[in-house]
Length: 402
Image (cartoon, rainbow, N blue to C red; front, side, top):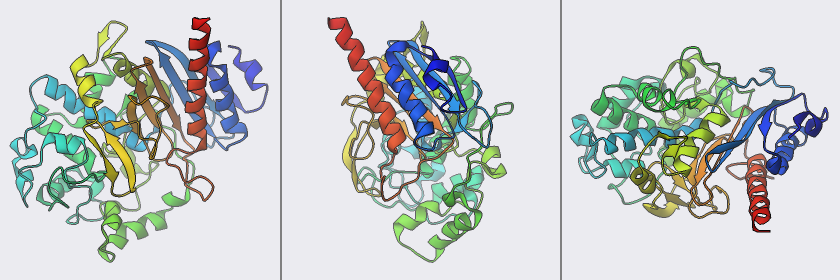
């Protein structure tokens, strides 16, 4: 479709490609800038193995125009790509789903954790969502953080409750990869997944990759970050402990963030990269003749292993293996019950719809913040994009039936 005609000078920049059948999605994408405050973002869609949407745009962004190769930090959206690394090791018989984590990482057995399995980790039921024996800033030091996790006392017996492992998930999964394979998680992902399959996404900032900065946000104020990282020492309530290993560098523009590896949140990439990653999974692990993972792995990661109230949000979640399943009470991946993926703070998302053979990804530099008018995880921008993506898909299916 003609993007110049669509834009008609409404925003500073609109580039990329879009199948005319997804014009409604493209219109919503432009409106997110002209009406809803986006400054730089990208959206991509694959349908039946073909890329049908690959749009990127900017409007008065402090980073300047969005280039085709630009990347952005996607926060927790990287948890699912990280989980696939473990599933590949399971495919290769180097790791076993029901094996204890301590069988690969002996120190992890301390303080009653010998029965915590790989599956408990992948379903966020390991009891290690928070750890109290770490210090401010440990998040950026792999050895200190993994040592603290290994020595930590679990919150509850494994499998007993669903607590989202917002930060610890990355170090536990990453240390398992390192213990079994020898490589750090970002290295494993790049060498085994992103580089061989030309997927513009990685678990950490790698040399030569341009990652756009996040415009200033209140929650990334250095004083606020310092305050909330110190507060857990004085307020023992468990929800306050999530932030305990962080410090004033806990924001995607800091040098500590960009030079460290903590793959629960340090992933970065493009919408086209995330959409391609999920395009493989939407078509049973294969795309354009390439095999990313087995059909069995896709079935396993997308099976509802846990369906329960997540204790931090007090909302109902459905979890596969490291992948969120469609959980409309928390976040929606469209109308399909079988969709799966992962979202990140600020509004980034990637998901696969195996029933429609569709994948969708959205990344943004203008992070969504909860307000009294919009308390949702994803924000109105993302909701409208997903809704209109499926509206376009419905029109396509309707035309085919005429």
